[in-house]
Amino acid sequence: MVVGDFPIETDTLVIGSGPGGYVAAIRAAQTGQKVTIVEKEYIGGVCLNVGCIPSKAMISVGHRFEEAQHSDEMGIVAKEVSLNFEKAQAFKDSVVKKLTGGVESLLKGNKVEIVRGEAYFVDENTVRIMDADSAQTYKFKNAIIATGSRPVEIPTFKYSERVIDSTGALALKEVPKKLVVIGGGYIGTELGTAYANMGSEVTILEGAPDILAGFEKQMTSIVKKGLKKKGVEVITKASAKGVEESDSGVSVSYEAGGEEKTIDADYVLVTVGRRPNTDEMGLEELNIKMGERGLIEVDKQCRTSIPNIYAIGDIVAGLQLAHKASYEGKIAAEAIAGEKSEVDYLAIPAVCFTDPELASVGLTEEQAKEEGFEVTAAKFPFGANGRALSLNAAEGFVKLVSRKEDGLLLGGQIVGAGASDMVAEIGLAIEAGMTVEDIAMTIHAHPTLAETTMEAAEVALGTPIHIIK
Ligand SMILES: Cc1cc2nc3c(=O)[nH]c(=O)nc-3n(C[C@H](O)[C@H](O)[C@H](O)COP(=O)(O)OP(=O)(O)OC[C@H]3O[C@@H](n4cnc5c(N)ncnc54)[C@H](O)[C@@H]3O)c2cc1C
Image 1 (tube, rainbow, N blue to C red):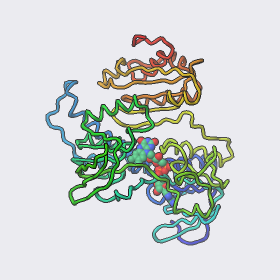
Image 2: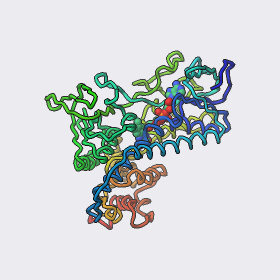
Image 3: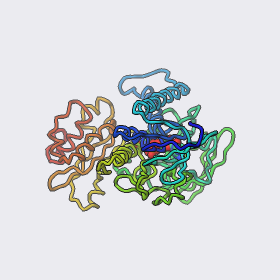
């Protein structure tokens, strides 16, 4: 941080270096802008440090450990399988370090100035950037706010050593013998699954009638079957009431089915949503137009009500996902450069890294009908796919939703092994305006899981080869 108070001038000031901010900064630099990025905590934001990446590393650890113990069907019986959790954490940390170091190099390589500190708006062309012992004023022509989100805290579950949020869950020093998860959204279910695979006895308490809202019931029922097999108890319509904490554990009280109950555990993980970081940075004084729940209102170029200030990622409406933040970052940077770029969320994927994985892109069958389309919904099961069987991962299906009159692809849902990667093909096809016939006529390598997408397209056309019509 530069000490002194002569304002430093920059073209574009990006606040926050998560997947929204760092991508926006790089794209802005690519268009010739002089770019400064401000970060108050760690380069890479939530995603790289305490979100997507470390959680996926721990999920992989859980998978390897679980598979090492339960592959007897394939003739593999390991006599002694142990988990060195300290080493597992070190593995996770090494992945994070590689990626965050990589992002820093990319920013530097693109001549983006990195400033450590917390940004606070003074007016619509000025911020003060403060760290523990200094402050610096920056003047900018345009700013992109990408300050992300933080976990919501329930007043009766104050975060502590044993009442933890997702960041705490990723930094544990031991595998909990018993873990209670409050909130069956994708973060709670993913982390609950990872710890169940590592040997924890997990209970998920969810207030709604079902977990993983946003994914179709026919998909989540397969995940719930998998959770049950791992011994994870899912209690829905459950209202978490409070927690008593001791040195060695927690006692969580909740109400379900009209009864008050308690569960004892080593830790309780609270994952009931994330709130945007839009407070405490001077936005009120700027009079930026705010939307619901602290989100900033933006137009299709991610421009706020103040024309030279843009906002992207978790602080604007829509899915709180890394790839959405990055996509919006590129649009905002290009808009500042005078390009005509606009957001189009037609084919934005949503993925959940449970066992098996869930993925959805475009419209679901129900959404397509609500939008007035007459649709064909065609499903092909993983159980009829050679690669899925050879992976011993026969659970799941691909579903394609297309317009009845001409087969235009409107959406796709996948539950099964590799769903997170397979969804890209469906997203590309939607983006390119393709029909189910286009997918059916694309030669897919054999034997691959991706063949299930081709075969679902053939189901839509009424000509499937590997299942009887
Ligand atoms: C456990 C977990 C798992 C997840 N898994 C996935 C996944 O698999 N896939 C997926 O797509 N998404 C996932 N997400 C969500 C994803 O992490 C977020 O959607 C994404 O990080 C949002 O990006 P962002 O750029 O908007 O903000 P963030 O990544 O939150 O970054 C914002 C940055 O701004 C900084 N900042 C805030 N205020 C200031 C200020 N005033 N001055 C300077 N700097 C500031 C913060 O320190 C932070 O580094 C996960 C999240 C969690 C918690």
